Amino acid sequence: MTATIYDVAALAGVSIKSVSRVLNRGPNVSAKLEAKVLAAVESLDYRPNLSARALAGASSYLIAAFVDAELTLEHWRSGRGNDYLSRLEYGALVECRKAGYHLMVELVDYGSPSLESWLLALLRSLKPDGVLLTPPNSDDPRVLEILERNGTPFVRLGAEVDLDRGMRVFMDDRQAAEDMTAHLIALGHRRIGFITGPGSYAASRKRREGFEAAMERHGLEIDRGLIVEGDFTFDSGRRAGTAILSRAERPTAIFASNDDMALGVLNAAAALGVATPAALAVCGFDDTPSAMLSTPPLTTIRQPVAEMAAAATRLLLPSSAGRPGHAERVDYTLVDRFSTHPAG
Image (cartoon, rainbow, N blue to C red; front, side, top):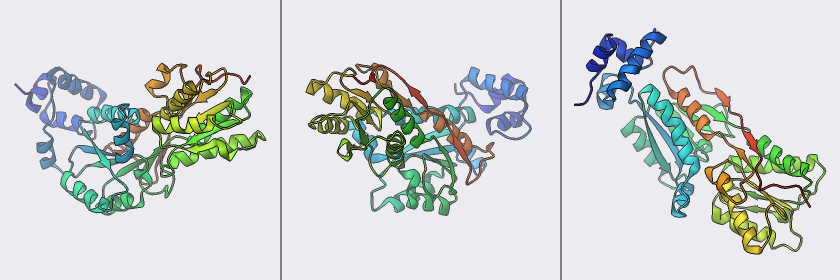
């Protein structure tokens, strides 16, 4: 039999109103009361009825996450899945569950001519209490304008333009890329290839800026022929890696703007008989599970996607003091594995 709020109140030995205050993150909730109610909720496996809760007040108890449809579908078609999405969901789900909210993930085709009408219909039918925006949606002026017009709170992940609109959570992609490039230079590499992400992503531009800044700071020439655009997929990394390694004068290192593309470079190097890391150092960005399992294991930047999603979700909850213009930075880590090696 499904547990009710009355069962939770009886087991915790408190009133129904107290249970409601705890579950809705209301005021004047002591740590002792919260612990008693949450223990009863866990023991009974109680799940609030969202429809009833929404009818009782203005809240839908629903957080929506908007992700890029094109890239997500491309990852799934390739059979490799989308680690960014998985980590995003995990971070947001943990915070939603704590607060009694549900998470809904929507694929948004920002290139669609019907984007505005589709998005308005979605907001009016589901009435989410808040929206998490991932790149490139987080910088799309149409998406921001519709959310503002509809009065829907939103948090932008990795936003780079109009930073006073909505709340945002970010990491310093430019500095992370600069640090990784400096790491390669410290290993003695001077001729370094770089694979960018798609231009529609602000992070792609920031990572390229960081790469070029490090090269210039160390007085090294940037060979434009060694900079190739990818689209964050394994296949694009393999194609870009093949193009770079087919040049008469090969680089001794290649920095790819994400791990999937770096893994594609490793594949291209193996096909061309280029030993890694002895003849070619390779590094990526993200620290996906595949980065630890590749041969050799991949040196990369650990992007704290789950932590960013969790922080963004907390900003959308009633207990948050976040307001438009509020920004939180989450730190990255350079993870040094075996795919980078001192230049020969």
